[in-house]
Length: 612
Image 1 (cartoon, rainbow, N blue to C red):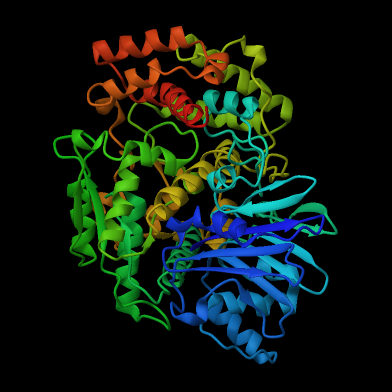
Image 2: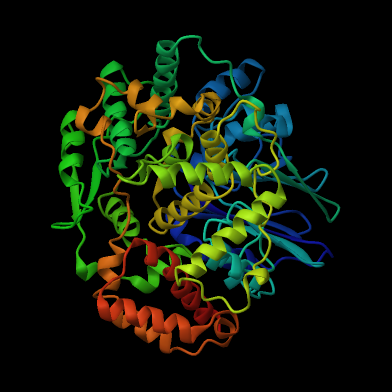
């Protein structure tokens, strides 16, 4: 994992070394192990890289890297987990490798297959390859957008980077707030990340499963991956389907244990992270493969002593099963204000809560020199999150609404207005103007995919959550919060083979008998603690926001409300917002619903105040 950057000047003006260095330095946290810069002969193209050394951590893995024939140059962020298999295939075709890195494998794959290489990769990536002969630039992002890639284009230049704030703070582009994006984020914080738009009007996002060509100053973007086009044939029997799921999941975990540095996991005690940790232990017992790291017994657990969301007992069970001695990080009221300004800056966007717990856990990994973490992200959106007790009606209602919204842009708009109406009815709508002023939903990845006619409401809902709404936002958060400390996060549940297989399964394989993730639960029978495997209650890896807003965050919130931010006042009815927040704080009645609806307003005002 790393931070990448690039500048292409269109009018021949040479790029100053300070320009590309400044862009990469703004991402130094993503790559604390070194930096590199490359210029073409005319010095109107520059590529930059900040390195987090995971595979071939010595000099051989440095970037930007030039191909053996000198024609192609790459700067790359991510991991190609099947690089050893691809390397053997390419060696059989005559390629000779100078390093042990997966970066060199990508260059050889590009020389052999061009953009056709993408479908051969099993991994996560955001990459840029420059052809010194044709002077064409190629940018690409992995199937599901695990690794970020943002860019800005003007008549004078194209600039790209791994983070929005690097572009905004670089001085290389004009910047302004996109008020349509701001309004959508305040209505639904999950409705933007799957689009190409960002909170900065001039910065665009290369969407997951897309690539971009820049040729002769002209930019073209194509979508190279549609999950629905790759659904496999399923085993005929239920037993066969369960066994196939386990085979795919076990191999996904095994591939992600390839590392030349220590690895570990963030363990919540829930099903997803426990399944990952227990499968890591099973893989070692079966026999580690080439380049698998033997130093993997590192589990990090956030605990909340005395709080209802403390999963320490469950985490201890999972760790004991895997024979791992976990490290516990106790989170209390005193953490509400710890590094809050830095955490908001590292998040660099608007979300439904303050993600301090995630940030603090990854900080602890770095402190203990564990820089790779295998985590359970993606499972909720792939197979359905836990249903809370008493919420089964709401669960099915959400599925029905998702089915309606997946049919057409008109259906999505209707559901969007219904959401706005319900939020307003509950007293959590503070945008100026009426509901009709709400911007139409943005085009999200997968919105127009032709889904199988026999798919049920749950599958349709999950497809959109996975590709366009919830998961892209979660991936953005975990990328920024982990990379703030130079930590690489790997996600076995997002192995493309497992994703396509699981999406092909019918609804009842994911939700039945009052359980979600049924296929995974059945596949893990006897392979993890039974109490965790069949636990229905979902706690979530979240900061205890209701408790914090009812207590230690109250003063910080009041001070933020007192700040004069004209752009925010034009957008939001601050009088009504303040009255609601003061009422909730005085009565100490913040709950998860009010947090999820109101925190984005506080988050947005903080961001606007920083640029005011």
